[in-house]
Amino acid sequence: MQVPWHLVSGIRYPESGIWEPGGWEDTIRAVTNDQTSRLRTFIRSTLGCGCPDEVLRWIDCTHTMVNCDEDTRLSRIDVGGQLLVYVLHASGNPHQVAATLPAIVAAGLVERDGAGFNRLRVVVAADDPAAVSPTAERAFSESAPVDDRLHLHVVKVGELPFE
Image (tube, rainbow, N blue to C red; front, top):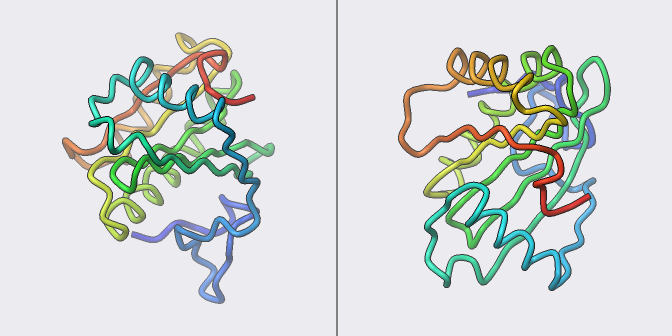
């Protein structure tokens, strides 16, 4: 599956004009012990992941920007090479979610399948999850295949384990 390059910025752009997942070279990477602890809590408590402890020993978190009508932050969490989490920081704009979520789901599926992750969790973080949730669920259901290894979560921005 290919993702139109114009939806993503700060990521490698091949000559084909298609974004290839895994091009997170221009991202910010900083995972402290405290942040790792917060990420574990987020993964277990907020997302309800039942990953074994050994999977949660290694967590890598990167951030980049997605280009839509306005710049939007996208975070990528690799949990032990088993679980892949994409977090779209949507604030409160449902139109932004509808425009951006299909490309993020497509890119996440390509990376999940290509890199051998067991599961992909797509998280939409919003100031008011109740206002964004219907739009996120609709965009997700229209763009995502039926797949028991793919999940959508809509959470409050304050629940994220990073600023």
